[in-house]
Length: 279
Image 1 (tube, one colour):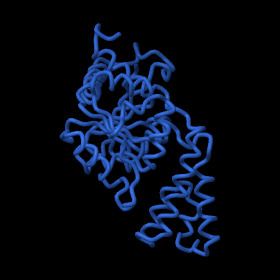
Image 2 (cartoon, one colour; image 1 turned 90 degrees about the vertical axis):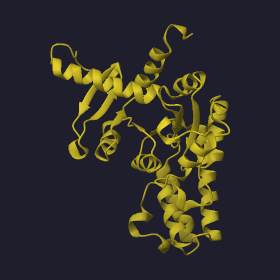
Image 3 (cartoon, one colour; image 1 turned 30 degrees about the vertical axis):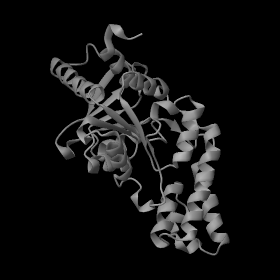
C-alpha cells in the first residue's frame, strides 16, 4: 500500500492520498528520504486510527458503494426530466445553466426551491426515484466495497446509509448484493423535505441519533464536497473516496484531510487490526 502526501496548505495540513499497490508505477525505496518515510508512517497511523476507531460508519451510496448510473446515464435522466418540465410549459423554472446540468439532483433542488411543497415537486421527485430504480439493474459495484462492508459488519461496527438518493433505491441495490442486513434499518435517504438534502447534515444526524453514537465516534465515507460539508456540520470525521485524480483533487481542494483512490487499503487496515483471529 502506498501513501503519498499531497500538499494542501489552505488548511494548515497535508492531505493524505492513499492508493493501492496496483497504482504504484515505480519502487518507493531509493527515492524516499527518512523524513518522508517518517511522515508516511505518521500519516498511516492517522488513517488507521480514523478507520479502525470508528464505532459507526455512515456511507454515501452513489460513488463509495456503487456507480448507480454506470449503465444508465444520469445526464440522460436529467435531460428527460428537463423535457418533461418543458412539456408542462415549466422549463423556465430552471436557469439556462440548470437546463443543461448533468446531475438530476441539482434539478430537483432547483425545482423545490421555486415550487416548495407543490405537487410539481412531488411528481418530479417520484419520476427521479423511478429512474434511479431503473438504474439499479446496471449499477456497477465499487471495487472492494462489498467485502469492506461485510468486514466492518462482522467486526460489529454499525453501518448506515446517508444519501440524497431514494431509500427505496438503496434498499433494492443492497438486496441484490446480499448486503441489506448489514445496514437495515439504518438507511437514511431522500425525504419529502428536499431542502434537507446534503450538504445539510440532516440524514447524518438522523443516523447518529437512531444509533445512539456521538459524532466523534462515527466516520463518514463520501465522494463529494456535499458529503464533506455535511460531515463537518454534523461533527463527523470524514474519509474521502475519489476513484480518479479529478475527484480526489476536488475533495482535497475542499479541505478533506483523508482521501483514498481505492477502498482496498481501508479493507487491509481492518484485516490487520483484526489480527490472527480473522478467519
